[in-house]
Image 1 (cartoon, one colour):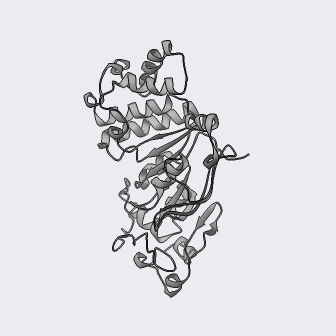
Image 2 (image 1 turned 45 degrees about the vertical axis):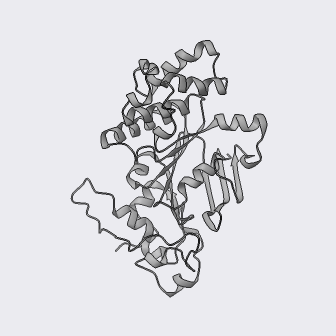
Length: 317
């Protein structure tokens, strides 16, 4: 069965910077979550934007239900933009402060002709109820809601056109802990009720452990490691994944992990280092890492990693 979304050799350039450098991913039909994890500048948000044609693709291919997304025009493009929606990191940047909540949701319903105009007000109220908000919020403005409530409105607006694919770009990073928990619970419920597939973009490894079956770890525009989320987090095959995983606090006080602190910052993406781009910060780097680019290769069933020493990282201490 063909994947819902297939990304092959994706490259995105901004001048001399390769923001995304030869990334390949697959996302099956829902309910299914694929997490994209990495530090700022890893390319995860650019991938999400490229999928939605919000960033120009320099190379490679993006296919949605076997159709080449980059070549869609006219009605086919409009249909795709209804099938694939995004929830941005900050709802303040996606909701018009001068527009009432109900009007904002109805605007999407009208643009894609989801329901007749006479039914759009009631549909907007129903969507707010679906995301756990008071339907009477349709008469309010964004500034009259809390951050968590605004994010729920943004999710309701994205769901209004009945998408099959969502790009969730750091959907909880601007929220307090309680609001984060509620939004995560909402995503968990909606993915099952609506059979949603989504790309979850985050720097928080703990979130993908809750919401994603598959995770890809990105570093400087390239995939460092990819595989089933549980196996990847329980037994990382790349030193970078191990460092990210070690930063997550353990609820079980007996399950202690050695904290891995990476020195320095990611290198300049316009002038990446030779060999493995992670080697200047890698605690396991050897001379081979400084000269030879590691190939993304199978290191365990369902797991791939771009590391010359992946087998040693996987091996128990």
